[in-house]
Length: 250
Ligand code: NAD
Image 1 (cartoon, rainbow, N blue to C red):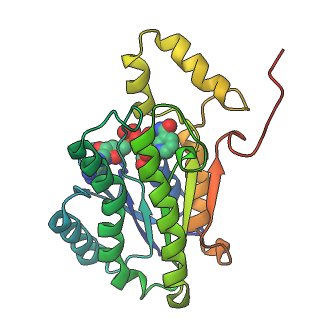
Image 2 (image 1 turned 135 degrees about the horizontal axis):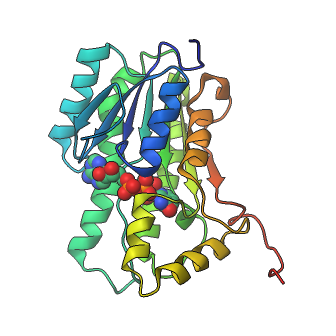
């Protein structure tokens, strides 16, 4: 089989579930060798699944060393692991702010800096970060989460500027509300899960949740050697939620 990622090795953080699992499937289908880094790697459908906590620097470094020991190279890094937070600006205490930023923002920095020496040696180096519609639109009751994803988008641009000359492209995807186990857990916790799902679907102009495979397709494009002139962008995969202003459905 020949694919556009033939001969390339990728790491996908948070690759055991939801969007990360779809990214892993897609990159492997297109020829990449994929290592998943996840808190709970059991059951990940990957060439290598490593127990890595992106909030723990030693664990991240060991994970990257393991990939290099097994496959000898690292070309593509997908920083996708993330956790949620709910509430307005007063809802979370300092410990929760530190915990969420540590995973969603510093986690991305930890994995990227461990990967950089290897990415610099790749002829097709790319980093793709999972940001969110929460970075580009104000969503209710998502203050801390939005701050973390806004930081991911800002970091994407800063990293793209720093590493362009080294041949490393850095981009982000901004998914709308996606149909993953994460959103399933949120719906299960709602007073009326069916009404909550209907409200989330109605918030997106295309009237449904985004699929994990749709996000994976966007990640695959940004990670691909075919996207050699694309760096520093946030690609929305949100059914038009960020850009469109439709009239209410009648
Ligand atoms: P998910 O909960 O289904 O999967 C997240 C994965 O990340 C899990 O396998 C989990 O074990 C792993 N993970 C969590 N903390 C980790 C850590 N410290 N170290 C390593 N792995 C860790 O969630 P998902 O919906 O697939 O979300 C994936 C990414 O997409 C997240 O960054 C999330 O913020 C982002 N996102 C999700 C949506 C959505 O609606 N689902 C929308 C926009 C952005």
